[in-house]
Image 1 (cartoon, one colour):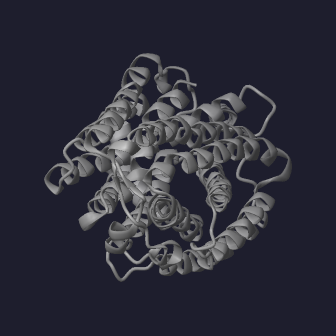
Image 2 (spheres, rainbow, N blue to C red):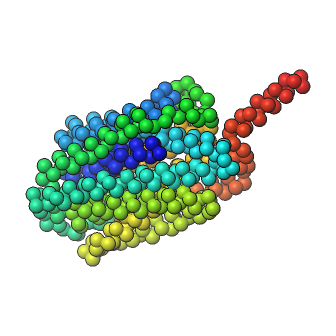
Length: 452
């Protein structure tokens, strides 16, 4: 629970700011540029994450990483390339170890619990991930509610603009048109400072929560993998990236990163801010958080009875319908409830892939958790970087990104089905708990020595 509470505070502050970045800093592409920088350096730090976790353990890695998030939020008081970009680099270097630590902490705790119950590792890992990502996606709620309430309170002091809806939706092409046409209201500086101060206070709360209330994993888990040297950890991470199972999952992970980058960048700018104003982003993304939290919890529970395959298939079909709808949506005839429907449907798909892929990784790579989650977050961060970076140029229309999402989704799901087929024709990943396997091997060695 301490891990869940820490992530809720930390991500509530950052995600609400991320949702606003593409609209508040549209001129010159500063908002999307800083986000692309964060996820570009996150990809690099993911490769080194197992080494960081090796020396600092999961708890203190999370504490230090939360500090880097607060530095980035604080630099938004003085938004410029020489302040936001260095802060984005620092946060990116902390983000990879943060998420790799979270995945290792969660999966190891689930496996440890499964050894004392009659449940399988897969069922417990899936349930743990469902609960965790319920908290993660629900962290959209408090931050986004605060952002919209603060921005709405400053409407009278802001600047009103006429909106040209011909540049909204799939017709939005880059930062420049959106900067000229998006939003019926631009908040004044005092309102923005109040918002950033509130988010910074909320994000800072995550640091003492992790430091004083989060249990250090090595003290109570008996199934942690054997410690490796820094070089061995790095080799294990790179070696796992070339494994057949990882190779088949990479396109689906890339789609997961692209669609989340689209939701936080293009959707908030081209669909919400452009048609309803920047002050509406928080309310729509609050619905996104509520739907995502409920979906993650629900999917984590029912996966025990349905398995992965039906859940992934339902998510695949829902995303096909949603992307097609967004591609042909007419902003002139669009209404506010259309945006809420898009957000809720998008949240369902995001919750499905984020929680179930993470659970799938814990099942596929039980003895290489840190390298596995480092690879997961590496490819996801690469996709995030591409999504934000490609939205900056004026000639990159949202319609191009939607078509790219369709292609990546179909490729990723096709290879996922192939992986499921391969797994069903192999021996089960878990014949018995890891701890029991270790004990059995020790007993066999003793028996062989006695026989000798």
